[in-house]
Image (cartoon, helix red, strand yellow):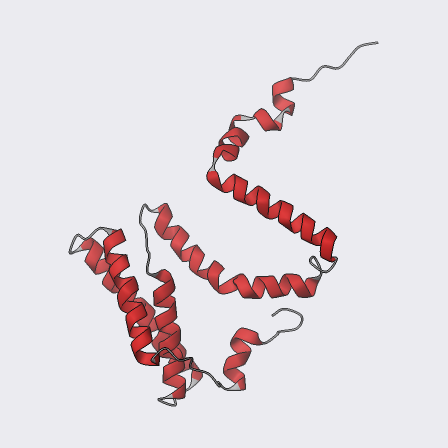
Length: 178
């Protein structure tokens, strides 16, 4: 009887050069820990992998994921933007302020908020490309300005009590999808 032999290196994924490179990255350990935690939570709680919980996790993470996509593009091109979270915050404050204090409608308030974010982005781009500041320094300054403006506008207090139509944008459901 003839024995079938296999090339050991082709079957051993663990020693594959691409997998070795992936394993050596710092994010691989974080990914493994995330998978282990998800498996543990699935067994311990019994509710972790149910659709309601997964939708809740996705909803809570969605705005961070959207910002991370933009930041990923910046990092891939060799840049850095430290101000992305603070610019997101000031845009939200301006949107809320436009609706609550100025009485503007939802679409116009959102457009103004997008304009604020665009303005900060253009300012960062100008400071980096035309003035010649390093991206780290320019965006660190923008981070401080955006946070300061948000605090100055709100006085440190929450802007709340929005219309049901606006709340639906962030909290509503379309069918089973949040």
